[in-house]
Amino acid sequence: MIEPDHPQLSIGQQCKLLSIARSSYYYEPKGETEQNLGLMRQIDEQFLETPFFGVRQMTWHLRNDGHLVNEKRIRRLMRLMGLMPIYQKPNTSRPAKGHKTYPYLLRGLRVDRPNQVWCSDITYLPMRRGFLYLVAIMDWHTRKVLSWRISNTLEADFCVEALNEAIHKFGPPEIMNTDQGSQFTSFAWTDRLRRSAVRISMDGKGRFLDNIFVERLWRSLKYECVYLHAWETGSETKAAIRKWMTFYNHQRPHSALGGKPPALVYWQRHDINQPDQQVQRVA
Image (cartoon, rainbow, N blue to C red; front, top):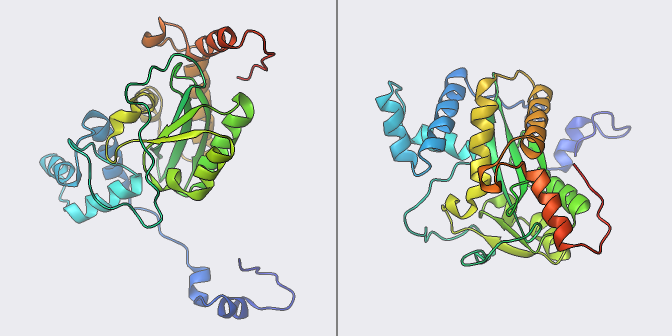
Protein backbone atom coordinates (compact mmCIF):
# COMPACT_ATOMS: atom_id res chain seq x y z
CA MET A 1 0.00 0.00 0.00
CA ILE A 2 3.00 2.31 0.46
CA GLU A 3 4.48 3.95 -2.64
CA PRO A 4 8.19 4.73 -2.12
CA ASP A 5 8.23 7.23 -5.01
CA HIS A 6 5.02 9.05 -4.14
CA PRO A 7 5.32 12.67 -5.45
CA GLN A 8 3.69 14.31 -2.42
CA LEU A 9 3.87 11.99 0.58
CA SER A 10 7.05 10.69 2.20
CA ILE A 11 7.27 7.11 3.42
CA GLY A 12 6.92 8.37 6.99
CA GLN A 13 3.76 10.33 6.17
CA GLN A 14 2.23 7.31 4.38
CA CYS A 15 2.97 5.09 7.36
CA LYS A 16 1.33 7.62 9.67
CA LEU A 17 -1.80 7.77 7.48
CA LEU A 18 -1.99 3.96 7.51
CA SER A 19 -1.44 3.83 11.28
CA ILE A 20 1.59 1.58 11.02
CA ALA A 21 5.09 2.01 12.42
CA ARG A 22 7.67 3.18 9.90
CA SER A 23 9.99 0.41 11.06
CA SER A 24 7.46 -2.21 9.92
CA TYR A 25 7.81 -0.94 6.34
CA TYR A 26 11.54 -1.66 6.37
CA TYR A 27 11.23 -4.94 8.25
CA GLU A 28 12.38 -8.00 6.33
CA PRO A 29 11.14 -11.27 7.86
CA LYS A 30 13.88 -13.72 8.73
CA GLY A 31 13.71 -17.14 7.14
CA GLU A 32 13.85 -20.36 9.09
CA THR A 33 17.22 -21.56 10.35
CA GLU A 34 18.98 -24.44 8.66
CA GLN A 35 18.17 -26.56 11.70
CA ASN A 36 14.45 -25.82 11.42
CA LEU A 37 14.47 -26.45 7.67
CA GLY A 38 16.08 -29.82 8.37
CA LEU A 39 13.43 -30.60 10.97
CA MET A 40 10.67 -29.61 8.54
CA ARG A 41 12.09 -31.96 5.94
CA GLN A 42 12.11 -34.82 8.47
CA ILE A 43 8.59 -33.97 9.65
CA ASP A 44 7.36 -33.98 6.06
CA GLU A 45 8.92 -37.36 5.30
CA GLN A 46 7.61 -38.91 8.50
CA PHE A 47 4.13 -37.45 8.01
CA LEU A 48 3.85 -39.24 4.66
CA GLU A 49 4.46 -42.52 6.49
CA THR A 50 2.41 -41.77 9.62
CA PRO A 51 -0.23 -39.10 8.85
CA PHE A 52 -1.84 -39.80 12.23
CA PHE A 53 1.14 -38.33 14.10
CA GLY A 54 0.09 -35.21 15.98
CA VAL A 55 2.42 -32.71 17.63
CA ARG A 56 3.17 -34.88 20.66
CA GLN A 57 3.92 -38.04 18.67
CA MET A 58 6.01 -36.14 16.12
CA THR A 59 7.98 -34.54 18.97
CA TRP A 60 8.64 -37.95 20.54
CA HIS A 61 9.67 -39.34 17.16
CA LEU A 62 12.20 -36.55 16.61
CA ARG A 63 13.54 -36.86 20.16
CA ASN A 64 14.01 -40.60 19.64
CA ASP A 65 15.96 -39.66 16.50
CA GLY A 66 18.32 -37.53 18.58
CA HIS A 67 16.80 -34.05 18.18
CA LEU A 68 16.41 -31.84 21.27
CA VAL A 69 13.01 -30.34 20.45
CA ASN A 70 9.90 -29.42 22.42
CA GLU A 71 6.23 -29.55 21.49
CA LYS A 72 5.95 -25.77 21.08
CA ARG A 73 8.56 -25.77 18.35
CA ILE A 74 7.13 -28.75 16.49
CA ARG A 75 3.61 -27.31 16.71
CA ARG A 76 4.80 -24.08 15.09
CA LEU A 77 6.65 -25.91 12.30
CA MET A 78 3.73 -28.24 11.56
CA ARG A 79 1.38 -25.26 11.39
CA LEU A 80 3.83 -23.48 9.10
CA MET A 81 3.84 -26.55 6.86
CA GLY A 82 0.04 -26.78 6.88
CA LEU A 83 0.02 -30.32 8.28
CA MET A 84 -3.12 -31.66 9.95
CA PRO A 85 -3.00 -35.16 11.45
CA ILE A 86 -5.76 -37.74 11.06
CA TYR A 87 -8.03 -38.11 14.06
CA GLN A 88 -9.77 -41.35 14.93
CA LYS A 89 -12.99 -39.48 15.56
CA PRO A 90 -14.26 -36.12 14.36
CA ASN A 91 -12.58 -33.09 15.87
CA THR A 92 -15.34 -31.20 17.63
CA SER A 93 -13.37 -27.98 18.12
CA ARG A 94 -15.18 -24.83 17.06
CA PRO A 95 -14.39 -23.58 13.57
CA ALA A 96 -12.73 -20.24 13.02
CA LYS A 97 -14.88 -17.13 13.05
CA GLY A 98 -16.73 -16.73 9.76
CA HIS A 99 -16.12 -20.35 8.76
CA LYS A 100 -19.16 -21.90 7.12
CA THR A 101 -19.37 -25.67 7.50
CA TYR A 102 -20.06 -27.55 4.28
CA PRO A 103 -21.16 -31.22 4.31
CA TYR A 104 -19.08 -34.08 2.99
CA LEU A 105 -20.94 -35.11 -0.17
CA LEU A 106 -18.90 -38.11 -1.34
CA ARG A 107 -19.95 -40.70 1.24
CA GLY A 108 -21.68 -43.50 -0.69
CA LEU A 109 -21.43 -41.58 -3.98
CA ARG A 110 -20.45 -43.55 -7.07
CA VAL A 111 -17.92 -41.43 -8.97
CA ASP A 112 -17.86 -42.86 -12.50
CA ARG A 113 -17.06 -40.03 -14.93
CA PRO A 114 -14.66 -37.11 -15.42
CA ASN A 115 -15.64 -33.71 -14.02
CA GLN A 116 -18.16 -35.29 -11.65
CA VAL A 117 -15.90 -34.61 -8.65
CA TRP A 118 -12.74 -32.57 -8.34
CA CYS A 119 -10.53 -32.38 -5.28
CA SER A 120 -7.81 -30.02 -4.15
CA ASP A 121 -5.14 -29.83 -1.48
CA ILE A 122 -1.94 -28.00 -0.52
CA THR A 123 1.44 -29.51 0.32
CA TYR A 124 4.81 -28.28 1.55
CA LEU A 125 7.83 -28.29 -0.82
CA PRO A 126 11.28 -28.27 0.83
CA MET A 127 14.14 -26.43 -0.89
CA ARG A 128 17.82 -26.15 -0.02
CA ARG A 129 17.40 -22.83 1.79
CA GLY A 130 13.68 -22.47 2.25
CA PHE A 131 10.34 -23.89 1.25
CA LEU A 132 7.27 -23.25 -0.90
CA TYR A 133 3.66 -24.45 -1.03
CA LEU A 134 2.01 -26.32 -3.88
CA VAL A 135 -1.73 -26.57 -4.61
CA ALA A 136 -3.22 -28.97 -7.16
CA ILE A 137 -6.69 -29.45 -8.63
CA MET A 138 -7.36 -33.10 -9.48
CA ASP A 139 -10.17 -34.95 -11.23
CA TRP A 140 -11.31 -37.59 -8.72
CA HIS A 141 -12.38 -40.24 -11.25
CA THR A 142 -9.30 -40.25 -13.51
CA ARG A 143 -6.69 -38.79 -11.10
CA LYS A 144 -5.65 -36.25 -13.76
CA VAL A 145 -4.05 -33.07 -12.37
CA LEU A 146 -6.03 -30.30 -14.04
CA SER A 147 -4.00 -27.35 -12.75
CA TRP A 148 -1.49 -26.40 -10.07
CA ARG A 149 0.25 -23.36 -8.60
CA ILE A 150 3.25 -22.69 -6.35
CA SER A 151 3.37 -19.95 -3.71
CA ASN A 152 5.63 -18.75 -0.91
CA THR A 153 2.64 -18.02 1.35
CA LEU A 154 -0.53 -19.83 2.37
CA GLU A 155 -2.84 -17.04 1.24
CA ALA A 156 -5.87 -18.15 -0.80
CA ASP A 157 -4.87 -16.29 -3.99
CA PHE A 158 -2.74 -19.04 -5.55
CA CYS A 159 -5.46 -21.62 -4.89
CA VAL A 160 -8.08 -19.46 -6.60
CA GLU A 161 -5.73 -18.95 -9.57
CA ALA A 162 -5.39 -22.72 -9.97
CA LEU A 163 -9.17 -23.13 -9.69
CA ASN A 164 -9.80 -20.44 -12.32
CA GLU A 165 -7.39 -22.12 -14.71
CA ALA A 166 -8.98 -25.55 -14.25
CA ILE A 167 -12.52 -24.23 -14.80
CA HIS A 168 -11.39 -22.21 -17.84
CA LYS A 169 -9.74 -25.24 -19.46
CA PHE A 170 -12.10 -28.05 -18.51
CA GLY A 171 -15.38 -26.45 -17.43
CA PRO A 172 -16.70 -26.65 -13.86
CA PRO A 173 -17.17 -29.95 -12.01
CA GLU A 174 -20.38 -31.01 -10.32
CA ILE A 175 -18.70 -31.23 -6.89
CA MET A 176 -15.47 -29.83 -5.45
CA ASN A 177 -14.06 -31.62 -2.39
CA THR A 178 -11.39 -30.16 -0.10
CA ASP A 179 -10.43 -30.07 3.55
CA GLN A 180 -11.48 -27.23 5.84
CA GLY A 181 -8.28 -25.21 5.44
CA SER A 182 -8.60 -21.43 5.49
CA GLN A 183 -7.78 -21.22 1.78
CA PHE A 184 -10.75 -23.42 0.88
CA THR A 185 -13.19 -21.77 3.27
CA SER A 186 -12.22 -18.28 2.10
CA PHE A 187 -14.81 -16.12 0.35
CA ALA A 188 -12.71 -15.93 -2.83
CA TRP A 189 -12.64 -19.74 -3.19
CA THR A 190 -16.22 -20.55 -2.23
CA ASP A 191 -17.64 -17.61 -4.19
CA ARG A 192 -15.87 -18.79 -7.35
CA LEU A 193 -17.39 -22.24 -6.92
CA ARG A 194 -20.88 -20.93 -6.19
CA ARG A 195 -20.79 -18.65 -9.23
CA SER A 196 -19.97 -21.71 -11.34
CA ALA A 197 -22.85 -23.72 -9.79
CA VAL A 198 -20.42 -26.18 -8.19
CA ARG A 199 -21.54 -28.04 -5.05
CA ILE A 200 -19.02 -27.66 -2.23
CA SER A 201 -17.95 -30.72 -0.24
CA MET A 202 -15.56 -30.63 2.71
CA ASP A 203 -13.82 -33.39 4.64
CA GLY A 204 -14.33 -33.97 8.30
CA LYS A 205 -11.74 -31.90 10.15
CA GLY A 206 -8.47 -33.78 10.49
CA ARG A 207 -9.55 -36.63 8.17
CA PHE A 208 -7.24 -36.59 5.18
CA LEU A 209 -8.54 -40.00 4.06
CA ASP A 210 -11.66 -38.22 2.79
CA ASN A 211 -9.39 -36.71 0.11
CA ILE A 212 -7.20 -39.77 -0.30
CA PHE A 213 -6.44 -39.52 -4.02
CA VAL A 214 -4.74 -36.14 -3.85
CA GLU A 215 -2.81 -37.34 -0.79
CA ARG A 216 -1.52 -40.25 -2.88
CA LEU A 217 -0.48 -37.71 -5.51
CA TRP A 218 1.65 -35.91 -2.92
CA ARG A 219 3.28 -39.17 -1.87
CA SER A 220 4.22 -40.04 -5.45
CA LEU A 221 5.42 -36.52 -6.20
CA LYS A 222 7.66 -36.35 -3.16
CA TYR A 223 9.26 -39.76 -3.46
CA GLU A 224 9.67 -39.59 -7.24
CA CYS A 225 10.69 -35.93 -7.54
CA VAL A 226 10.90 -33.64 -4.51
CA TYR A 227 13.09 -35.75 -2.21
CA LEU A 228 15.52 -36.50 -5.04
CA HIS A 229 16.51 -32.83 -5.41
CA ALA A 230 17.58 -29.82 -3.37
CA TRP A 231 16.36 -26.86 -5.39
CA GLU A 232 17.99 -23.47 -4.90
CA THR A 233 15.34 -21.17 -6.37
CA GLY A 234 11.61 -20.97 -6.92
CA SER A 235 12.09 -21.08 -10.69
CA GLU A 236 14.04 -24.35 -10.41
CA THR A 237 11.32 -25.79 -8.22
CA LYS A 238 8.55 -24.71 -10.58
CA ALA A 239 10.31 -26.14 -13.64
CA ALA A 240 10.88 -29.50 -11.91
CA ILE A 241 7.27 -29.72 -10.69
CA ARG A 242 5.99 -28.86 -14.17
CA LYS A 243 8.13 -31.61 -15.71
CA TRP A 244 6.92 -34.20 -13.19
CA MET A 245 3.26 -33.18 -13.52
CA THR A 246 3.50 -33.61 -17.31
CA PHE A 247 5.06 -37.02 -16.80
CA TYR A 248 2.38 -37.96 -14.25
CA ASN A 249 -0.52 -36.93 -16.47
CA HIS A 250 0.71 -38.27 -19.80
CA GLN A 251 3.20 -41.09 -19.17
CA ARG A 252 3.10 -42.49 -15.66
CA PRO A 253 1.05 -45.74 -15.57
CA HIS A 254 -1.65 -45.74 -12.89
CA SER A 255 -2.68 -49.04 -11.31
CA ALA A 256 -6.28 -47.89 -10.70
CA LEU A 257 -6.59 -47.05 -14.41
CA GLY A 258 -5.40 -50.39 -15.74
CA GLY A 259 -1.87 -49.12 -16.27
CA LYS A 260 -2.92 -46.14 -18.39
CA PRO A 261 -1.87 -42.55 -17.62
CA PRO A 262 -4.54 -40.21 -16.19
CA ALA A 263 -4.75 -37.78 -19.15
CA LEU A 264 -5.46 -40.59 -21.62
CA VAL A 265 -8.27 -42.00 -19.49
CA TYR A 266 -9.68 -38.53 -18.77
CA TRP A 267 -10.17 -37.71 -22.45
CA GLN A 268 -11.35 -41.21 -23.41
CA ARG A 269 -14.08 -41.21 -20.78
CA HIS A 270 -14.86 -37.52 -21.29
CA ASP A 271 -15.56 -38.21 -24.98
CA ILE A 272 -17.76 -41.20 -24.12
CA ASN A 273 -19.85 -39.12 -21.73
CA GLN A 274 -20.14 -36.19 -24.19
CA PRO A 275 -20.28 -37.79 -27.66
CA ASP A 276 -22.22 -34.98 -29.29
CA GLN A 277 -20.10 -32.09 -28.07
CA GLN A 278 -17.02 -30.59 -29.61
CA VAL A 279 -14.26 -30.95 -27.05
CA GLN A 280 -11.22 -28.68 -26.96
CA ARG A 281 -8.38 -30.86 -25.75
CA VAL A 282 -6.09 -29.27 -23.22
CA ALA A 283 -2.89 -30.85 -21.89
